[in-house]
Length: 186
View 1 (cartoon, rainbow, N blue to C red):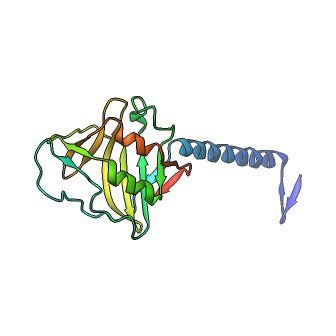
View 2: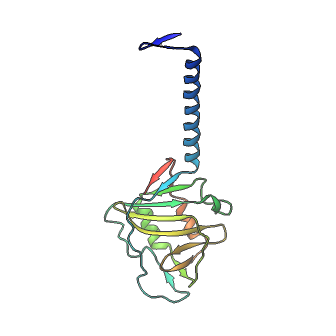
View 3: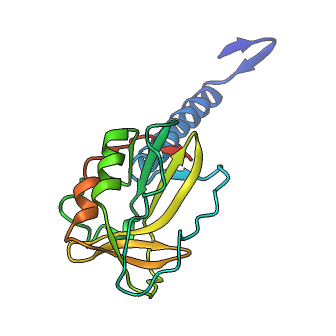
């Protein structure tokens, strides 16, 4: 027995405290490990309303990044891969859930080379997302498909945009850096 500020602590109470502490450490460790492989994304930023630049017809080529000046301001791109999409994702994309880049040269390269074909349709089951932030504000957000045989973007005001050349998206997305943080705040 040990005396603690006038109260005697029994060995049984001491053992219970130890087991409780060990249990809490195990639970916290498991939660952190889970979040490392299934990160929690919190979107706390105000989004800019993304609108098409002009009316377009089915089959037209679209450059969704054409109006962004990557030379001014701080730019970040996040790619968030849903667990359900990992089954058919392109082999070009490394294992992980969240990827990020602040590389303006990569963003400029994407702007120059990523073209999409307007399909005048929608795909409703897209769960993965891509975000583009300027000075910590979301200026572009859309659903993204990076499958081995199909790649494109689902945007609120365009609908489905298929890449104009095979694997054009995965070619750039594979160059984003994996985020290992268990919690990502956009």
